[in-house]
Picture 1 (tube, rainbow, N blue to C red):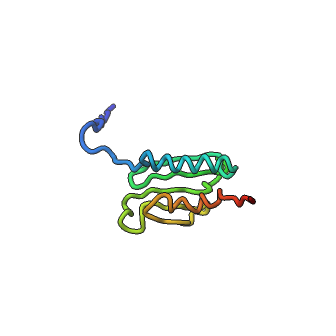
Picture 2 (picture 1 turned 60 degrees about the vertical axis):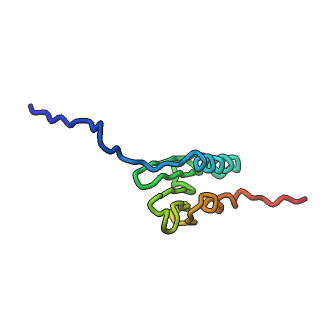
Picture 3 (picture 1 turned 180 degrees about the vertical axis):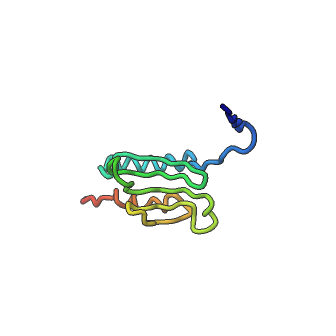
Length: 115
């Protein structure tokens, strides 16, 4: 019986991963909390990969995400690194700044109040 030993890569470059910084994550989780309070979302998932990081908000855990917020730094100089996807996967908004991309979701939370 012959065994092949593959060394664990200690040195060299580790696979880089895109993530959210503290302010970005705070803004996204604040929106998530307000969406939960409004009864729109019940669960979330985060995915961190080499090219992009994404946050998905779900109405129910067994469904497609109701919305997905994606950060793709490679597009920073082009159409913007932030993208908001809808439930069917359609692009709802792209931009360079997170608050502008989150606006369509935040607009859902606005309610008219009679004075």
